[in-house]
Length: 275
Image (cartoon, rainbow, N blue to C red; front, top):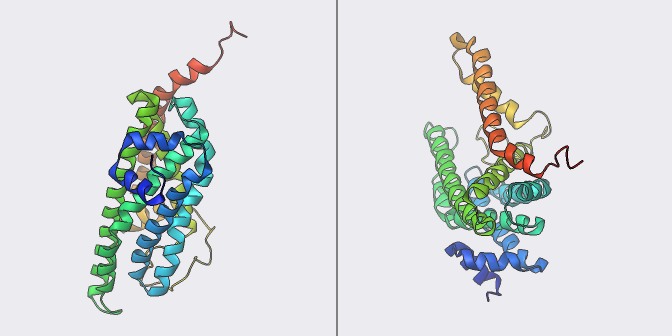
């Protein structure tokens, strides 16, 4: 039986599904403490590395904001994830759902935290302000961190999928549950990251903990504006077509979700004969 926080986190990093199941079956709130500590340390270290690419002060800011982003996302989506888990047959209780999501984020934090020294090395190699190399270095720094975050996210969600499958006993139910959880976490997390910006610290903008207007606009409006701004002036008429394409993709995704979830909803909805 693993009791110490270090041994629990080591077991999580090794990916032992059996030990994670036993961990989820514990009802003590203290069982979540190692996961909280792992997220704070791992994401804090990686946030420090990201912010150091701008300045030591920015490193301190992002070291605080990155774990905060994780906890806020889980806090907002905790109840929703629990309801989706129950509806889609995850086999987990609300508490186990929250703890399983914490496990996934803690594994993500351990991976990015272990790679933080590499990012710190890149940050210390940052060219001086006003040089031609700075813009090229900044793009490479963003690309490298995107790759690290994507890699850690894939590994963490793969382990989460195996854990859900062990509880549900159904690969189809585990996939549906994971997709629903990911959709909610990404939707909420993207907007929260927009509110808590900046993280990387654009060299052209001042160093701030938050932007002066954190609640002005949304993440999705910003992405849309940047997409249109990146188009050549001669392609301005492409904007409505791009909007139509986004609506079409959204409709296809909604249709796919409906086709997967509708049988489950019908199975738990009382028929007219039962009423």
